[in-house]
Length: 356
Image 1: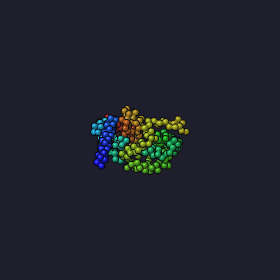
Image 2 (image 1 turned 30 degrees about the vertical axis):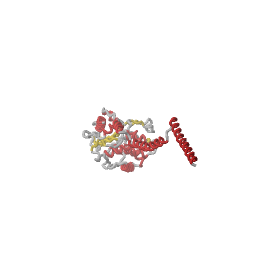
Image 3 (image 1 turned 30 degrees about the horizontal axis):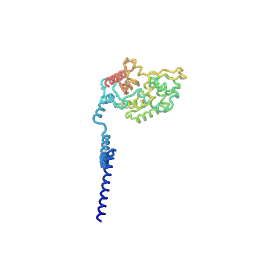
Image 4 (image 1 turned 60 degrees about the horizontal axis):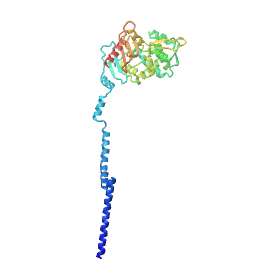
């Protein structure tokens, strides 16, 4: 019995020794082949598990943080010249004390900023600046500007008695609406203005009602029209502020802009003018005769009555931006005196150019 037990113990010892030896052999082979041991694998896995969330959090934090302080400073330092100019011009304003005109407003067209003002809310007589409204309303109300309009003979006698300026069309002549627009705006023809008004509304008085409705719709708050020409009437009034609103609105229309900035226009032939007629801008004509520079002025409409004085609504372009200037009430008569309204415009745009 003892001998059997001893034999069993001896066998068990050999088995254990063999198992341990096998483990040693396995570890030795792993070491030679470079395989990680089980303990190392568990350590690497734990390390990866701990480090992965931290890396993701660091990445997220970096993305949320945005540019560094140095980057932000560099971007601030790289402000464009245009931005610097805009900041410098934000407080720009011009004095109106030296103007011949009693009422004036200068507006930057892109944002409506008023850069100069002189009695801008006082009521004034607009004279032929009225034709800005006549023109834009006709453009919007006449579907085909190439179609002709018959100029009724009876209106000519009335306009001549009122000493109205005329474009040169004749009684009974059939003229295209686009040529009447140039006739109203360039030489300030009352014949063209009344012709357009009659075409749109049937009569000048009915057209005046449309003018007042349009004035209210676009934000002219203290304006009242009684005719399409601007011939004097005590109940025909506006303000230079309202006129600047009107001109800014009209200039958004490409047809109006083309007419307003034209220096001359040749009309199509008619039965009474087989060769057409050449219409010239009274503003550009006076600007040329004045000897003043005025290169900044790219379009405009003059006006004059004894009560209104010399009036001008103009479009100027300086350093890539557009400005509108409306002036009224300058002394003079366009025949025996200097064109003080033109002089005011040249001086204002010149001063503006120096200030920019």
